Image (cartoon, rainbow, N blue to C red; front, side):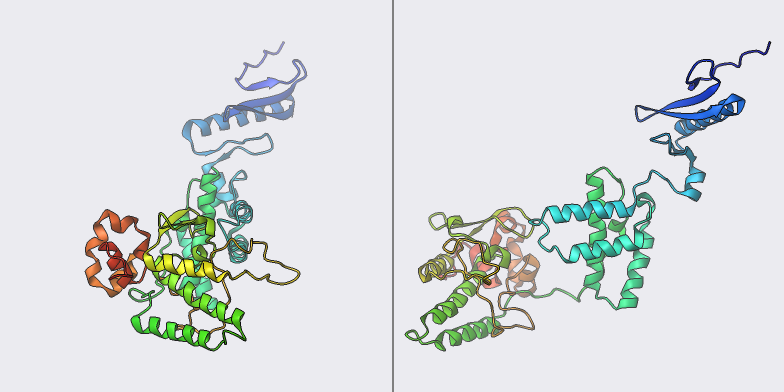
Length: 382
């Protein structure tokens, strides 16, 4: 009588005495069971599967299967065949695109990011996210830059979108790497770009706006004259409040506190609410805007503007191109950041290290107003 083979841990007959062999291993605290067939060959295959899995677990050189349909692969096999359980760049793209579309307040541009995501998916979609290298991303960006003659700023946006795809994947525990973060940004200009108005530009813009007001007869064209006055007042607010365009034109009267000299900004560039503080000029101008009582117009009969007509502080009339500075729009002059101030007035560097400099929203104002505010002087009386 033949001796019964010695038992092997993890290898068993599903039905005792059937000579049909199966094997089981534990992966991430869950049992993975796999059937291997009848007779000595079935048993030998089951033993080989279990031993290979134990070797990989002991050496950490390979991939254990999450289900019975997935193979047990060593590191060398993964290098040749690829990890069948790996998260692909395409999956990361799909996850991030869903997040972008589900959060329009955070991603207000719902057109360009999906286009960039689709292009990235087309290029790297089938690649395992964990194996994508920074050098491959950089080579691809160089290639599309040369072939399509894209601007450096456009290449930076593509690189930024790819980085956000991996960041989102890390937040969702899909990957633990971000190869795009190691790709350097490209130079988009030489030196500091001055993003505030010069005194001559400010005077020129005021003259243009005043001419527009004077061109409308107060008796025959009262509504057009009010709109022209509104443009001059909104220019005054943007110049002296430090608000961005989005913040300024989403400001509601309920968020304006004249007693505390605070404008509560709920829609900002980074999505976080903040307070902007009024100087005397801004308070006077906002009151003049309120007295104008200019209503928001509907966009069209089929697409009405659903905002309450008496709620927004500024009606956002469209510019007709009278006030353009170096190709920019009428309202695209609000300074951004302390570097713009340092670019024009060297004497403003001293307050930079103080707590007031780091916290005041007026750091985005034109230097002449910011300097006086930091010194505790209202520009209206200086």
